[in-house]
Structures are given as C-alpha cells and as structure tokens.
Length: 322
Image (cartoon, rainbow, N blue to C red; front, top):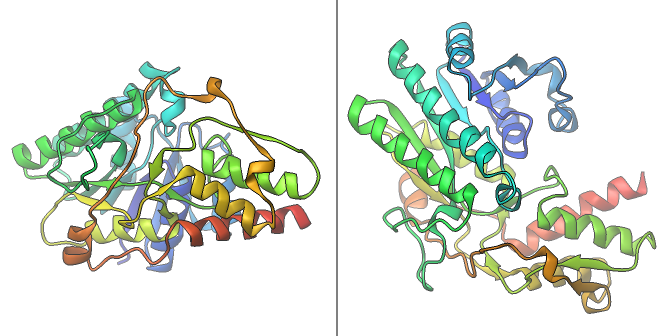
C-alpha cells in the first residue's frame, strides 16, 4: 500500500513543493488548510498538482480539530509546515505567531501521543532560532539566541519536539532550514519583492525600489531541493534534527546586484534605502554548517544564491511576458 502523508501548511511554498515530491514518490498526499473549501491552493495549481492532493480543513490551534483530522487520515508521515511564516510580520502579530507555531506544534505532538500513532513527524524549524552566532557557523549543537517573535515561537516548538522524542519515544524531528526561496514565495518576502519590482522596473512599470538594511548576510538556497531533505529526515532509522543550508553566505546587497544585473540593470540607479523598513532587531549575519545533513542524509544543496536569484528572475519574466 502507498504511504499516506499529511502536510499541514500545504498551500505555502514548502508545502506545495513537498506535495509534488511525495506524489512523485507514490504517496497519497493530504493537505490541510484552516478552511479547505475557501482556500484557493494557488501554489498547488501552479505546480499542476491541485487535483491530486486531498484537502482537509484543520486548525492546528484547535486540539479537537487536530484529533479529528489525524483520526480521519491516519497518516504514516506528518509534515508540520503550518503557522505564521514571516519574521517581519511577527513583530506586529506576536501572539498569532506564537500560537500558530508553538501551540499548533504542541497540539499535534499531544494528539499523536494520546492516539499512540506509529507516525513519523517532521516539524519545520528555522535558522532564525540561532540569532547572531558571533561569526561562527551554526551547527545542530549551537545555542539558540532568537531575535524575533517568530524565532522565539520556532525555538519553543523545537524544544517541544525534542521533549516528546525523549520522553515518549515519538519519531519526531525538526529541520533547521536556512533561507530558501523560489517563484512560489509571496511578495512580502524580501527576495520575491526584489525580483518582482526589478522586473517591473525593467518593464518600465516603476522606477524606484525601497529597501531596508541591505548589509545583512544570509544563506540562501532553492526551496524545491530543501523539501527533499525534509523527506529524507523521516526515512532514517532514528529521529534526529538537521540543519539544511548551502553553507554559503551572501549579503542582501549581493542578492540585489545579482537580480538587477541578470536584467541588465544597475541596481544603484533604482534602489533607495528606507529606514522605515528596518526591523526592531535583526540578524546581521547567518552562517550555517550543513555537514550533518550531507554525512547522514546524503543531502547537499546543488544551487547557491546566484543560481536561485537567476531562476526566480527567469520565472518572473515568463509571467511578465504572458
């Protein structure tokens, strides 16, 4: 029989790519949304898999709702990608961010424990948990120093996973994913904002772009291959947490330059810095050591920042031309 996978947050970037990956592997895929009848699932549509994914309504903040969907679906694997996903937005919505990420994760863990389900559980954690690492590469043993409500919530969920794994023997693990992008990113994320607005500048639809701090440095990868690491984590003999990253760090200014130069433009002629776009606190530099994933999962990123930027621009130009 084919394995069944439940993806909470299937409508997002990672959820859609993961659903496609699992379908290609022969899984029966069930995806959840707060209101499945009203959700458009536009990313599933863009990937051409909307009709192949069964959808269910579930609110991970509601324990009864979680119990009902687990009982109905009886999944072999659960991928928890749900919750508020924007670092910037978390400063204005801290309560919603914490509840959707931390309480949602706890409800899933407790439901699995109570129902005594032989399920494998993946939780989407984040490199944001590490905060500033003083110029050192973060590995799976690096202490957390979260610098946003989003990071605090992700850190709490991480330790919930570790506690249930150790206390109750659940097969539960977290992926500490560093920044990963794709054309499915919404424009509230800075990489997609830059790509979309740069393409509009190229098309003569606008002249200037406003950005905040472009000196921050991040490890940017390609989302479609990061979901492969998620799947690999649940295929291991024992549950363990993994960093997923390229191991290469670049400044946002380098990202901007790459995007504009791929369009034949000089970014300095079009970008204006706006202090109103600065966050109350931010991570100056994000450094990753993804060695454990390569050693134990056999996973290594194939695309770096420049390839990611160019692929996003190419996809954007296709939509502009049509």
